[in-house]
Image (cartoon, rainbow, N blue to C red; front, side):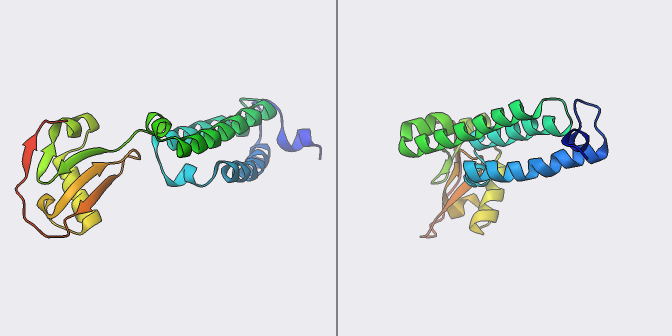
Amino acid sequence: MSLQQLFGEGRELDALQMGARAFVLFFLMLALVHIAGMRMFGRKSSFDTIIVITLGALLSRIVVGVSPAWPTIAASIVLVVLHRVVAMATAASPALERLVKGGNTVLYRGGVLDLKAMRRAGISRADLEEAVRAKANRLRLTDVLEIHLESSGDLSVVEDLVGEARRVKTVTAS
């Protein structure tokens, strides 16, 4: 069986040819993930999500025969190397990191909700209360000091180690 028969050409691919392409792409993806580093999947920032989605969309075109394999693989390698270079540059430059990856936003601090920041982020009071229960094993907002919306989209909770009770106030300060 020739490579042409095994992998096919164009859009008229049978199940064996698409399976063969998917098999090869699996190992190519392992190599690309190794080059990019596991942070691409671990951190889940918008910076990382963009590369994961784009890479998946790009490489899927090879499996279904919509795009030629070698130019598509070359484009994928460029994206992964670019991701790696930008990740290394942002690790060295806090200003560049904030520009590329964004920063965190304080949504709650010391009994005060920042309603304007919450609205901008699409975060409700119920979302904050859920984070308190899930991450701090506490029942009320007043049981924690702060809640931050991280650049990854996660809510992080800073616990109140003193256990001081607070009343929740709502303000629109930023």
